[in-house]
Image (cartoon, rainbow, N blue to C red):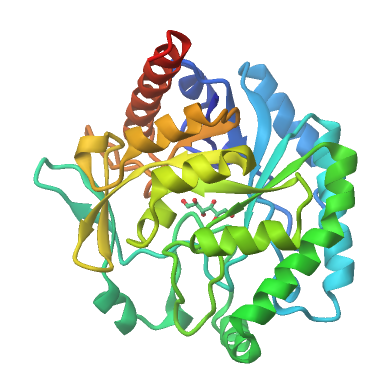
Length: 347
Ligand code: DNO
């Protein structure tokens, strides 16, 4: 595996040098943030980002995310031009050695939480999700840090209206159309697409969500068998769905998992959860079992610690402070090393 760390570009308060100092850190996962969704990422902007990473001796082989324009998800006539732009971005990324692009196909909203700083008994704080609270939120006035895009209230209203006509099946067909449109560019550039699951993995505000578990993946690979069509295996997103057996899925899809987001949740009732430190014992997800399943099935992709708590007085971007993610990386390094060495001696 190749251990990586998410870095939000020059505006990130965490210096690349600090990231480099985390043991076994091979590279960063980043993006060009100042290009409107749907436009081509010019080569010069990508090269500038790459220079910064090179300067810190960190590889830039994973992009998270190249956002997908809503017109593509909605299947509007403008999608062909937008898909061509996306394909051009992929070709440009390939030119500087990018190997994997993480993206999602969630309508309008990316990940959703109801509290970004819930206090824990030990004084740390973390993100959490409460379904009751979510149902009371007005989707037109939501703004969450970390999202790749934000809309004006008017745009948001318009979008929510447009999605009323889109079923799960239609959205899935639009995903397949998009993937078929960009696969030739992926073949040419040697780039693996890694779809991020919906977070949490159920419909939100009446908007359809289609990447929620095993059935979604079976359907996706049957529809687009190209090897460049793969997964970002996010334990926290998939794990919020109590129906998902994570070690089983990690084993089943290991050769399609190009990128793994490994993080922990603690369940609170049937739908609710709070995020926790990465350690298996800190929550309800079998992080050890997932890593074991990945290693045993030949996984050789990129890994990153995901959402951390705020600890040691840090007041970081929710989920993306330095300290707890660094602890997560250290823990994951230990798991991988121990399991890989066990395997090497036949245990
Ligand atoms: C949240 C992230 C997501 C992810 C996108 C990928 O912390 O995991 O925002 O980057 O869904 O497109």
